[in-house]
Length: 284
Image 1 (cartoon, rainbow, N blue to C red):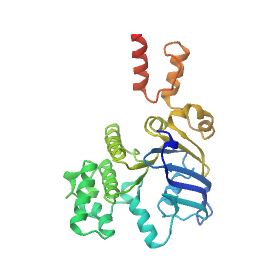
Image 2: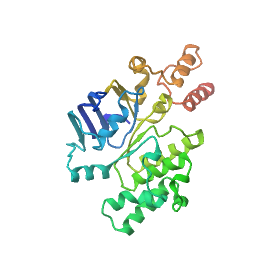
Image 3: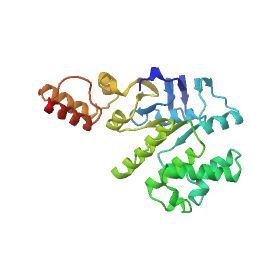
Image 4: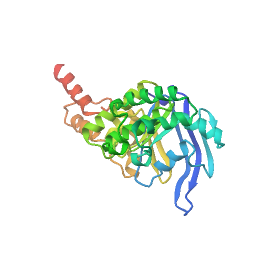
């Protein structure tokens, strides 16, 4: 889905930030997330990905530049941040950073109750959120007794209960086995189908290429490149400069073209698309 077809939802314009010890976080960083899109943020450790996320819902405040949400600069008053955080939810890499209540139900209900909802309305949101991440049967369980992947899904449910327009996930696939990753990906796809804008950080370039509408490349605290995922092969130089490889499927497809097995054209985004091309070619 090309970015030009969707209005901007989150915008960073020349944002800079350094930590109290002088460690740089962001350096004149500009980036746009379009409403309704799926976005992958890639880059090496220390590139500024988590710092960027912490600015997205006002946990950090820029020392220079502007962060806009829905076309307006973030308002850093208590009321302004409360409104923002009901719309922009963050799920951190380690679920134990977000789980603090005894039971799953209590943890997921914290956000809605903090918004001032009555208990019945909060319960409806909690039940819907747990159903969305397929964790309804764990409602009465102790959160910290669940598996790592289950705790991640509970964290997502806690954010979903706030009914966000934008969901930010920091390395959501980290620490999950293949089956858990597949299950979580299905949950994310369901959320996107419901109209939630997704923005996640990942070190998996193959996943980013296969899943995202837009890819944003962070280096040294700034967004060095942003492009539609289908155009990734054309941005090989930017990836190489950041020490990142091309997805394996790109190399596979180029080899097949060189060997005359596949015809040149649009670069496939997953192995399944390569197999489809080869099947079509064998039929012709």
